[in-house]
Image (cartoon, rainbow, N blue to C red; front, side, top):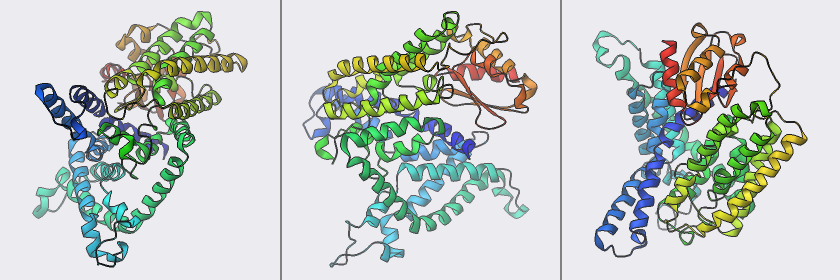
Length: 498
């Protein structure tokens, strides 16, 4: 099950990777035409261009669920074939059409109560549930149907009189048939699921700053399992009517919604831009002198990735399994700073993650507030993260990067620090037991995802010497944390394996 969830998490990275372009387009657009979404008159060429860019970015944000469907479909396919994406799209169209409120009202009127005038009661929870059926959750579900249908039926052989539909041509048809059954089930189940999500969202939303802090705490705590994506869908997108991210980038303000817009994103900025680099510095300062060079190669790149674009996985996976207690404290610090940020009124949003890039582009959006507070908040986060990490590491002798027990067989050639992708790939392959021991090679946004025949041949310490860490999800699965440049290492690794 864990392997399946991790594969799903990796597949979700494909559509999520489209979000940065939305942020760039809409950020520039609002800078050029700040009143475009407020009903103001657009005057001049710059404002026209700005309005055009806002709409271009919104085209992706507004259709995020479809991107999830296609991205997950392709990502879950064994060979990443586009046929799975087509099947996922067919599934999405089928489910969202069959569960449209008009269709549901026709075939199951008892599920959508009528008012005294015989019109659908729009205050009904059931009505609201189906009116928001085109959401990221359904997108992910459609992607799973498309991808798994492809894996199962891509080689299907039909009788001669149906041979035209054999193989990949039957995948979309099968996905559509499965979607009909799924739609029939959701007709009864979806209102219950939706109600539970609404209760969860309202429960945390009603807690104000404390609720925002709890959300951030669980967001970080779920990173190792990949389940943080499910939690994010509840608060960032329109799954339950919150849509903190989509509304923020859609040009709305807190006056247009029932919560302080941006409160589920803003607090991540001081943590990712300043807290993570400071924690990385604490790890460097507490590393063994003879291992600081290697630790710097890991921690410096992780700190830069976090500051610039909010990619924190290289840092988090570098210590979460070495010092799980410290990782819980790390998640708690996020919760505290998100709560504090909510109270002081700093508001910024991200389309990808809470790094400098998104901060700059979100500063011109209507919902952005007190942007300059990032300076005192960032300084505070840097101090707190550094002090807490340094104290915990020294006090409890935690084995963070650079503090591992000495091993005479440990390999260290500084390849990671020098961006020598071929050397990194060779070292990882050697640590895995050679070409003959590797059965599958893949990668996500920051990790190499590998399958091996004999797990006893894997030398984790040798791999860690040229990476940010190693994860063993199952007996034959090995994940190597590389960072944002993992694609280059993966390309070299695949050449070596061939």
